[in-house]
Each structure stands twice: as C-alpha cells, then as structure tokens.
Amino acid sequence: MLVHRRWDSLGRADLGWLTAKHHFAVSAKDDPSHEALGPLIVWNDDQIAVGSGFPMHGHRDMEIVTYVRQGVLGHRDTLGSEGTIHAGDVQVMSAGAGIRHMEFNRGDVPLKIYQIWLLPRIFGGEPRWDTKPFPKGDRSGRFVVLASGFDTDEGALPIHANARLLGATLKSGERIQHELGRSRQAYLVVASGRIEVNVESMGPLDGVAITKVATARISAFEDSELVMVDTG
Image (tube, rainbow, N blue to C red; front, side, top):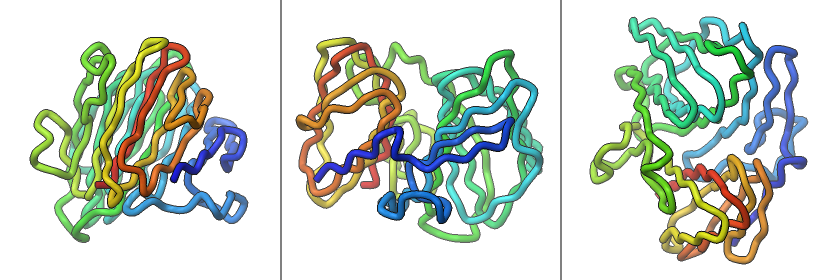
C-alpha cells in the first residue's frame, strides 16, 4: 500500500528564523493520519535562515539523523564534538542517556535539512555523534545506504535503530527498484525532481509511506534526488 503525503498536506511551523514542514504529525495542528512508521517518528523538512540556528538544547533516547540538502550545517555538543556538514552529507547523533547540542547555519544561503528521528533499540545507551560525506555521484542510478542499524551495511554511519537511511540520484528516464518484502516498511521523500512509485506520481518534496509492498519500482520523470528510510 502507498499513502502519498503531498507537500501541501504536511503540517507547518514558522518561527521566522526557522520554517518547517512535518512529514509526520508532531503537533495537534498536523494531520493525525500522518502517523509514525515503526521506529520512524519524525521527518521534518527544515529551512534555517542565515546567521540562525537551534540554541543549545537536550535530547535523550533518540536516534537523530540529519541529511543536508542545501548549505552548510554547523554542530557543537557536550561531548566536545564539533563539525561542519555540507549538502549531500549526513550526520547522526545517538542521544542515549542524554546529550546537549546546538545546530546552526554556517553558510551564506538558507540551510535546508531533513531532521529524521528514530526510536532506538535500547534506551539509556552511551551518547555519540558522527558525520560522513557521501558524494552524490556514488549513488547515481542506485540506492546507497547512508546510515544503518545493521552491521551488514558496510560504509554506512551506524545508528542504534532497526532502520537504514538510503539515498539515490536518478537522471530523467532512469528506473530503479528497492526490495522490501511485505514485512518491511519505508518512507520515501523526493528531495528534488519528479518520480513515479508503483504508478503513483510524486512531485518535488512529496513523501510516500510504503507498506505491505514487496518491491518499490521507481521511475524518474526528470533528474531527481531521493531520500528513504527503510524500517526493516
């Protein structure tokens, strides 16, 4: 089953320095049918103004994956970690027993990121942070695992959740498929471009929840960038 969550149907928040769209309901104003998908409970499309960002704040018992779509993200936390993450790259933070951090726009254009929250397998673990570049050319015409809770996914950033984050870029006319099996679920977002998933047409920034589908068959109508969480 495919449940299309179109861009204009998503919940929205506007704080001036931050505008956000919610693929999953996070407030009473959001569509209640946009519910969690297994351990995947948050997928926010955030835009942060130049010179702004999230001040120091805390998290616990959450796996937080950030995919940078545009600009440069700065990170600093109470573990002493500090990093700069560029468009196409990924950072992961396992909050575990507790961590405080700040994230901010370190560039000269609006920062666009996906903030993805996943429930961990075990609560109260040791907090950690990591980041890694993932050249878009390496995922041309195929899905590449960017972050994963499974040891078999070599090269991916490790997380403590039963899920994996994947990315792909497709040229107009290209087709790929992703095997799920009917016991797994996935959420796919069109970061840019236009595609079709099992005959369901999707526009830029749309999302789709995929359940009870053995194979997701994807065709690109134009050059496209895809980001997906497989909760297998």
